[in-house]
Structures are given as C-alpha cells and as structure tokens.
Image 1 (cartoon, each protein chain N blue to C red):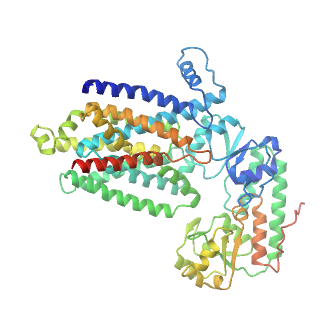
Image 2 (cartoon, rainbow over the protein chains, first blue to last red):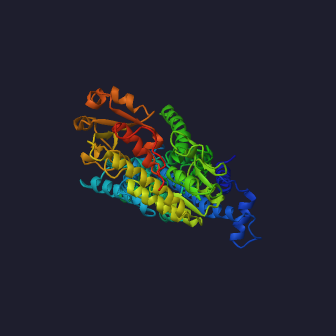
Length: 341
Length: 261
C-alpha cells in the first residue's frame, strides 16, 4: 500500500470510528438506550423522519445529560491531542504533551480555591471558570517570568513552566489541607478527571476555546513543520522563531486550560494519539493535527464509556482510564525511542 | 421523593409513607452508618451514587440534596426537569431542627416533621435539665489529623452533651486538621473518636498524644459512627449517648424515652 493510500485509510477509519464511538457513548449508560432509538431521536430533532421512539424519560437522559457529555469528551480528547501534536513539533520531542505547559496545576489551584471558598457549591460554573482562570493566570505568569530577562530559550520557557507548576501544586496542597473534609470530595473527583454532571454550559466553555485554538494551531501547521527542523534552520528560512513559538505556546495553553477546567486531569491523550499517528500519516502537521484531533476524540469518548461502565457503585475517574492505557504505551514508546537512540 | 444523602434518608423514612419514597442512598441499609437500617421500605431504590440518569428514570417529584452538592450538578438536575430541595444549616443542633421542619414543608409532611421536632426538643430539653450546673469536661474530637471546631455538628454535639469543645477553644472552625503538638498542648479531659475506625488504638500508639492525661487515664470515648454523623432528628439521641459517657451520674446510659408531648 502506498503512503498516500495508507493516509487515506487512516483518515477514513477515524472518520467512521468517531461517529460510531459517539453513537455507542449516547446509547450506553446507567439507563441503556437502543442505538436505533438514539439515531431516530436525533433525526426527529433535525426534522427528518418520524417522531422519536424513545420514551420521554429517555429523551431527557439523551439530550439533557448524555449529548453534552459525549460532545465534551470528544472536544477534550481532540483538543488535548492537537496540543500534544503541536508541542511535540515545537519541542522536537515525540513524548511532549500538555503537561509541559503548567496549565494543569494552575487550573487545579483555581478549582481548589473555588471549592475552599464555597463558590463551587453555591454558584453555577464557579469551579470550571475558576480553573480556567487559574490555568490562564499560570500561563501569564510563566510568560512574564520567562521574558523578564529578555527572550527566553525553549528550555528556559520549559523550566519556568516547571517552577510555576510546582508553585501552583504547593498552593493546591495548602488549600486542600485547609478545606473542609466534605468539600474536598468535590475537588478530588475533579482532580482525578471526569465528565459527570457536565452540561451544555460546560460544552460551550470548552468549545469556545478548543475549536478556535485547534483551528489556530492548524493554521500554524507550516511554521510548526519548519520549527521542527530546528531553530537555526527555521531562522535561516526567515521564520520569526520567537513569535511563532510564543503563538503556538499560547494557543496550546488556551486549549489545554479550558479543557482541564471542564474535565479535570485527563493524562496521556495528547501523547498517545499524535505519537501513534505520526507513523501512519507522517510528521507533517497539516495531516497530523487533524488526524490527532479525530483520534484523541475517539480515545476520550471510548475512555468515558469505560469510566461510566466500570461498576454500579462508582464511576471510574476518566483520568485513571486514560492513564491505565497511556502509561504502558508511554513506557513502550520510551523504550522504543531509547532503542533508536 | 428521592434522597441523595443519608440525613434525608433517615428523615424521609420517618416522615413519609413507604410508597412516597422513591430512592435512598446505598448507606441507608448500613447499620454502621444509618439509624434507619432495616426500616427502609423495600420498594425504595438504593442508589449506589448520585447517578443523574437513574434519577431521571425514577421520575421523582423532588430530589433531596445536601449542602455540599455542587452547583453544576444542581443545574443539570433542573435542566432535566427535576426539582430539588437543598438541606442546609446542619452544622448546629438548632440548624438541624430548622432543616427537619424545612424538609417537612418541602415534602408536604409538616405534621410528621413537627412530631420529630417535638421529640428532638424534648430529648435536648431533658438533657439540659439533667446537666444544669454540671462541670463541663473539655472534649477534643480526633480523627487523625482532623478535629471539629466551631460551626460543626460534632462540635455542637459535644456542647449539647455537657462538654466544652476544645477545638473551638483553640479558635478552629469547621472540620480541619490539627497538629499533634497543638492537640497535646490543649490537654483535653476526654478524646472523642469514631468507634471501629482504629482511632482509639492510633491514639494509644501516637508518640505524643499517648502521653496526654486523657489517654493515660483511659478517657477516650468511642462513639458509634451512625450517631456521630447523625444530622437528622437522631442528633438528639447522639447528644444523649455522649452525655451518658461524659456525665454518667446525671444521664443514664439507656436511650432517651420517646418523651412525646
């Protein structure tokens, strides 16, 4: 099979897998709904075909609870995968992902603060908005500190991110210890990653950042490819290296921050999807980014089904499901990379 | 009516005819946690967790949630067409009384709620009468490393049982951690711990707290969990139980009589 045919097959597979995963996610849950009924209900909503065959209770479950949740899962997965793919090109390291940005600990600090002050229990969207603000503040702090002594190197930016992350994590620990036991449970579920209780407003919050952010990164596909050749080579090709780097970094944080705010920590998605696809669709960002978005979306939608179906007493944290899959993959990839090195 | 917290489980079992109780939490049948274990109507679904999809399928008229249910979940409940009633103010004994009456109004069981409150008031009034003029031992609740300061049900329980809450004296508020050195320095007369939690053994093995007067002289009260966490009308029984340990000469160990007016 030629490379071109293989790429087409990969895109076709992903294009079929995503709607199938979405349909499965809409059908499966505490109250199972027949896939055919779900489809006919969707057509009925679009004014196509006859009335929905689902009972009123099924309609409420499908459109008030599952539909926004499943779309958020797709956006979270797609967003994290695009961020991972972009950062892997930027850092020229196939094992880079959103964890390098420092937005996760910033978001966690914001979320814990919202719980500690009681906002999360009193005000709608308080926790995701506080998490989003924490993520963006962490980003601004990293940017300001890194640029205090002039234009930073890539490693300087990375190390500043690590330091700010450590600071935010320390603040989170202090707040957690000072937070009432009952309130801590709320934030623990959020920190472990999950989509239970997320509705259309959370979907709007995620979509408002993920879609334009991912599109922005896709528009930077060519500069990203040039950057992946190395900074000196990129500069020799007249690329404004510093400006592009900051733009990519900023767009990645803009996607990863709200995603973390809505879903908590969902590790390894940004690593697995682009890493696996690079071998199939090639390293060019204009192909890798959209393929990663689709694969990340499928991965998180399926992981959410697994999280929901784990048991009757508890919904498994989404972040644990992706980590159970991602950590072994990461170790294998690391071994492979060391073997090549 | 669907309940999403143990306090509501206990109150609704007392207030409602069995057919009106659609669901309870899975803890309602647990004798270690629940004061109505064995009395929950068989027809009520035991919800393992706050599962919105199953709640919608049960189609309750009202969902009883706790103060700590987060606002995003409540919005989703509303959007799914489910009304909710939030129980608040359970951190004090008067707050629990008000919450019982409030719940009674919400579920249209005012008479049953008034009956529960009448007994609650009677038990607490009898306790106050028996404890009048008694010296108040200084009690420290200990769930290593947490304690219960001001504005907590456990703190209120200690005070109603004729004790002084040491954590409140220390200026603490809420269920918060307390450093072992500070607890040692506070020198409580009695430690209050949860029965069966291993806290009593841990206290005796603690390098510092094992040397406190209270531990050395064996004044560690192990309270059954179902009473310690009771935020329903059973909080009065919990106060009685604790008072019988702190003031055995004034309060008999037996459970308080019904004391119906």
